[in-house]
Length: 300
Length: 132
Image (cartoon, rainbow over all chains, first blue to last red; front, side, top):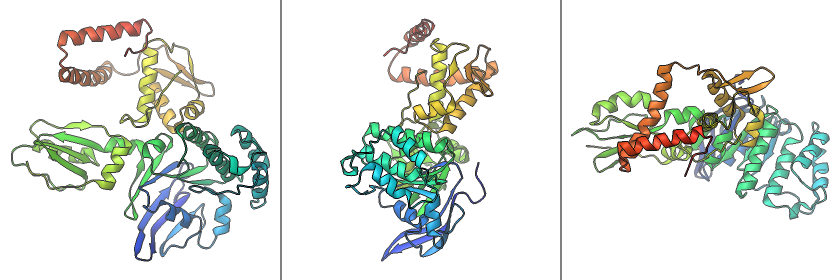
């Protein structure tokens, strides 16, 4: 499914705003045809990266490639091949839905009016409605329509479900599966709501401290990251293993969140009085362990 | 076929689909020969990634519970499980181990636990849904 280099390929990207270093050596590879979840806390730099992918912002150092092109030199061509839906996208409120669709069509040589009309009907958008009168859910569907109608090979969605109610959110995800995955489009989906994007993603990457600290298929992440609960033997000391993301001790019991269960099973079992109890974690808990995990020194 | 995905669950999505289809086959709400929704259809309905549905269907097909006929669809199989007896026993034991631990935790004695299990088996054979 993935071609070498991927549809989006980022290498050692750096960006600084004044004193604030937002990205510090970010590496990323998005396989063609995948739905890729891009996770990070608010302010982690998700939108900064996206703006660089579209050629709207120049990196201080590093390299990116989108649909085989360099956004620094080929920004216009990149934007023709990429559908982009911005966070809280503002559209011309005074225009009618039909007018806006018609007007935007002129900017894209590959615009498909038949597809635009088909999407408008499927998304139940009234062509005569004023854009300013649409509900948040309707507005996000319109933004998705506008991002899709020029048949892009990559679609970048920047926190698209922000501010949507649960029903509108579900409908939106359904559109992503129905219209994009079925068409083989690569989807790069940024969000801070992990549990929400998990079911629709092939793979997720976690952005923290200006770097991708983890990038893996969703199922692999769940299989390898576990909480280990154990009663340490007298005098046991928690070894400093790289795969321990978070360590907590309470009433003589250790609760450890580990990244690679199989790698630590041996050493931990030998330190335990009662063996190891493994607990499955949901994606929110996994994310939290990576982003805010503390590796404290533990003594029994 | 009704499938419900719990988003914040610690159980992976493909597992949730596998478990619910198994349950529906066990209680007879899905019968041998029944056609399941296509991967695309179910993916869009839930909504989950198509590859997740595909993974669940492939897993069930591997266990002999479903058959995937090229170009025709996915059907509930009548054949005995494709898994070895020892593998089937291991899978069920793992689940019972959890149930036993919970029973101890909630101070439910062995006799009562056996009764509860009997009752669940009866509910299944009557085609019932889970109670409570």
